[in-house]
Image 1 (tube, rainbow, N blue to C red):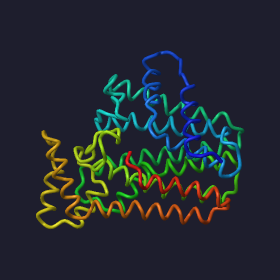
Image 2 (image 1 turned 180 degrees about the vertical axis):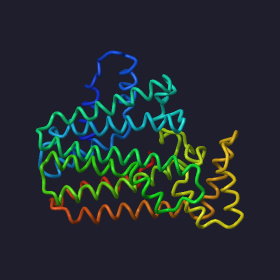
Image 3 (image 1 turned 90 degrees about the vertical axis):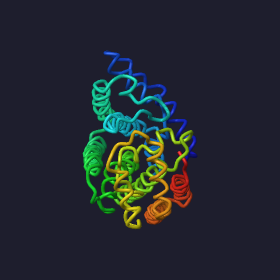
Length: 324
């Protein structure tokens, strides 16, 4: 197997080579733009790594990895429209740089392009990849709808929230890893185990993302810090704060999440203070660790060499301590 940076370089070079030189330009230019912004590209890297975990050259999984990343970026374009987000990876979002209609249509095209990449595989593998991808794509949409629904509810529970982030984020991380296993044609047990590994990793990743949205460094995070607070999103931080809050803190938090503020800085700082005072920020960090450890427990059951387990373990631990 290669080291992580080699997979990242391989994916980066691969996406640099994808030009999408098609017409009409106003459809494809936003696609080129969002893909050129790079980002962590975690999901395609995991697809390539999962292939080599099971002793198959990762080049064979490049098409599947591309499908995963194109789909992920399609979802980001539409998410940014729904959230009215101004920044993505430190740059203008597609709908801000162009307009909402262009964002919707270019995103739709990316979903179709993602499916086309599976055509590179023989029928048996194609069918298995497409079946997993369709299931995952629908779950991502379901997770996004839960996320929208939660914005207007004051009774969201922790289990509901965890189900939402499982569908919205974790299933795509899990599917990315299982696609590598499918391309490698490993055993069904290994496919299922690496899916579970990715699922728990994805849950830890999203909880970390929620934490960084409130407490991250704006210079490294790449998105607007405090965006979830501005949008009144019921994140794990919020739900834990509500669970632990005093009567006065709970009333203050409910008030702050009942309107869109004209002074976002004051609102963000007030909410963050409550997150810290109630212990919600510490509990969120603990949950990130717990899901990371669950991923590692799954890894221990996998029928692969210890050297490969060590590489996957390093990825899990790096994600747990990331700041971007």
